[in-house]
Image (cartoon, rainbow, N blue to C red; front, side, top):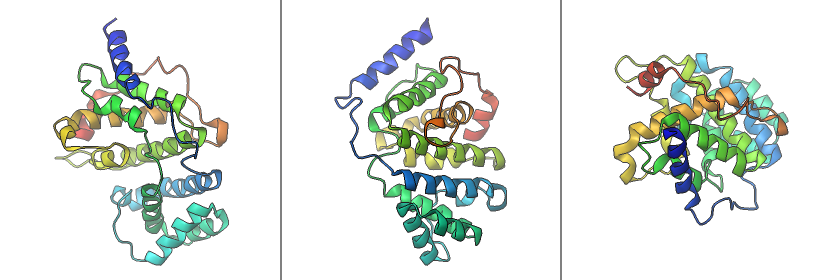
Length: 242
């Protein structure tokens, strides 16, 4: 009963937004660019253990800036043939930076501000599993198909990196923390709540990996009833955020 009331209060904060459910008619990404992003992510996921987690979504200068620009343009134009040639040539670090650059140029946030509010607002009384479940459910409901696929692909990439990257003995795996500003509009008032926000983000990554199949078009779907949330291994979550 308590969880039901908590979820009700959580959703009420979402409905407060005047632009609830109203997103731009212009989609966040084209079909061709989405397929290009999928191609890059597939290449990165298959090389995570070789490259390590240090490369992912870092806006650092790559050795071959011209190659980075080529990959960015190939993603924007959805030029799969040229993109595959570049990836086959081994430009993995450049591809990761190109993906970072492409995502920073998107006209819309990856997670709409109205849905971000479920994570950023004061909801410390709501279990993190419920917050993550509701965020994922609202994204599935409110985002366009391509937008939802894009977020799903990226969350699955993060899940892969977290799983194969060893955690630092003192700090744990810092990737989720470093990625918070990329998915959420973190402001100064949220600093004191960063651990709670990061914990919700980790749950969102894991939930997306378990319940979403990031395939083509309509093949992106929930696995089972979103209300039947599995209990995550809390020790692993704590390990990541130590």
